[in-house]
View 1 (tube, rainbow, N blue to C red):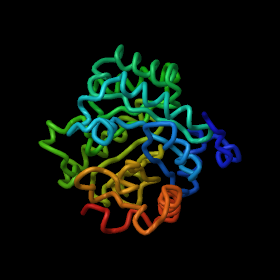
View 2: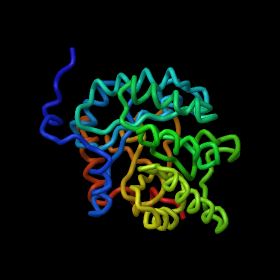
View 3: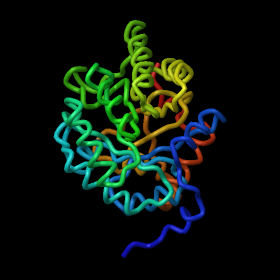
View 4: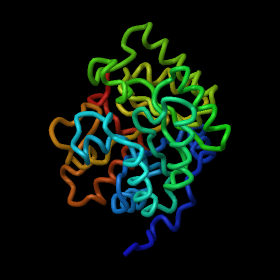
Length: 276
């Protein structure tokens, strides 16, 4: 039986203009993944601004070695479940591998995830010409878009593994140019993953849209982690850029509250969570 989240009922719904105001005011944005209604409820109660139904569910829920097997049906199912647990937190849903292979498929994904499953925004990886075209087409049809640059997990085979991006000057310049391109195409939010902290700082200052880092240093406009990493329950190796916030605490509620507080204050990510 669904129970109204009394903590969230006291909050105004998070909106894209509100996130833009947070960037302008220097207030850090807190994002966290969610895959079901129960986690969504706890994330919202902790004060998280944005919930992301990431294709990371392929790793932490389905047990795959990459995000590539995740389908649009999978994302739509989990997005609808998370939406039922939220009332104030903004909901973003990933467009999975090859569901963005052309504009028609990207629009279909946007319609299902926003119009059907209850997301407020879709996230799309990369800045190739067809992706920029898709961002433009989605936003022209009032479907907000979050871009994703840097270490984009759907490109794992192209990168030769989950490798930090932008360490060389040429690669860093390419990512900076991509950020300008996705912004020009209409993206209103950007996730930046797996880059040196110096590049994260430069990129966040170079675009007007909020930049949410994951392994991109402390100078982004906000941070996102996989909730399973935050709770220390991810099977196997935990990424360098993550932290077990449940360690030393006695509840999921306390761990999520600590994550929110540390992102807001700038205590997370610390130097040990960053790349040079």
